Each structure stands twice: as C-alpha cells, then as structure tokens.
Length: 142
Image (cartoon, rainbow, N blue to C red; front, side, top):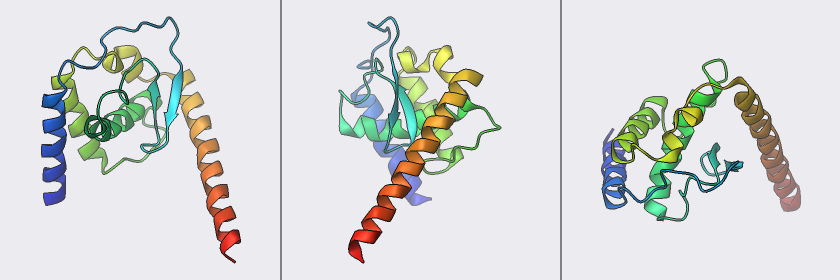
C-alpha cells in the first residue's frame, strides 16, 4: 500500500516535470508497432516515450501496459505491471497531464481484433524466446 503511494507520487512528479513534452501528432504516415520488453506491452515508434527521461519512461510502462489491455480486450488476459487497478490509475493520471499525446488517440486505446491478434502472437513468441533463453542459461550453469 505504502509502496503504491510512493510510486504514484514519483510518477505524478515525472508527469508534472514533463507535461507537454510528448508528441501530439505523428510525423510518420504508418508508424510501426514495437514490443517493449520491460513492460511486456507495445508502443508505436512515433510516441516519443523513450526519448524523454527514464523517470517518465518508468511511469509510462504502467500506462502502455494498461493501454494494451484496452486494445486486446477482456478475452485476452495480459496481466498487469503492478496490479490492474494500479495500472489503470496511472493510465488515468497520465491522461490528465498528457491529454493530447498521440498514444491516447482512440485508435490506439480501443479494442481492435486485428491488432489484438497480432499483439497476442508477438507476446507468445517473445515469451517463448525468453523461456528458451532462461533454459539455455540454466544449461550453461550445469
């Protein structure tokens, strides 16, 4: 409980410090969707998240993870970064400070069966590769 409060305060501070610094329009006609390993979620290459500051990026991992739950819909459980409730609270907080951010565009925050299928396939492959990597490391130790 206390840890969640501390994280919320840190994220709130990052949102205030970087308010208005994320792109509101895309310079690309068809930006690519990319898998973000640390959050297990997806970003579009034009969203400008990782070019800003690591504190903001840490907070936005919860935002993009919650956004992914909106895009893939309720039939696909993608878990949460911390908890579903916490991720949603950070998502809503970010929307207050970055209301026009391109990542909050309805097309990137709404259920889309084609994108959902693609996301779930990519996540499955990424999980498989990660497990294979862990197994290889275990074999090296033996």
